[in-house]
Length: 64
Image (cartoon, rainbow, N blue to C red; front, top):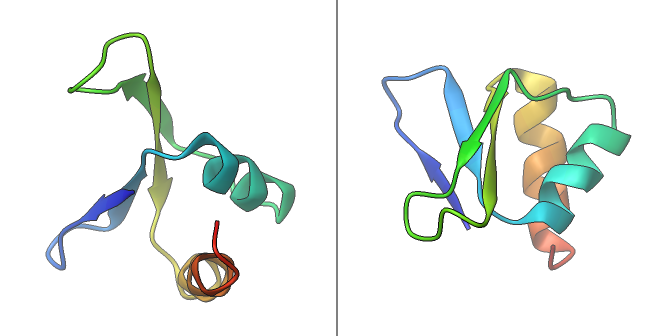
């Protein structure tokens, strides 16, 4: 699950597996925060760039 706003330059990733895969591709989160629905879980905030969005879309297509 992700949350994005076309007016912002960041994307919040709620799935750890997806966040880890993005980090393996060299995209470091700009911050982390507790999940607003479950404070025992984390969310990762990534900067939206062209290369990030390309990798993100590919990973989502792969089912992450």
